[in-house]
Length: 137
Image (cartoon, rainbow, N blue to C red):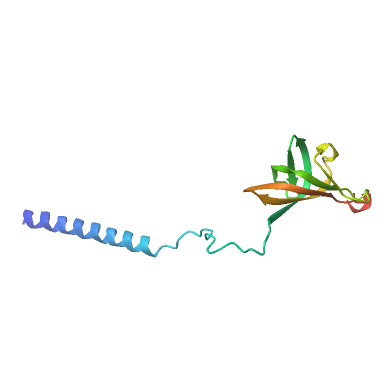
């Protein structure tokens, strides 16, 4: 009788382990897959000449060929500046293309336009927004 209890104990252990293993495999096969960004398939569309992005916010610092920018949501980052960036201020009649970043003002709301070139986004233009009247702040 003692041998029969020992054999039935091991049969139960093996059955439980097999059920667990089968459950693990079924769960692994039927689990939802994480979402991934699909790879670009096919040829690049020749209609497009560039990929662009924009940041509405404040330029907080200027150094050599880089700007530190904080967007209106409070997220900060650093971006490279193109060799010929266009700077437009509302009080100026025309925009000016320049490589001199001394014209860049910090702490003033602006729309910064960037273009993807060689895998890096570079600032192509800075459009300063008009200052808001005191009663609208």
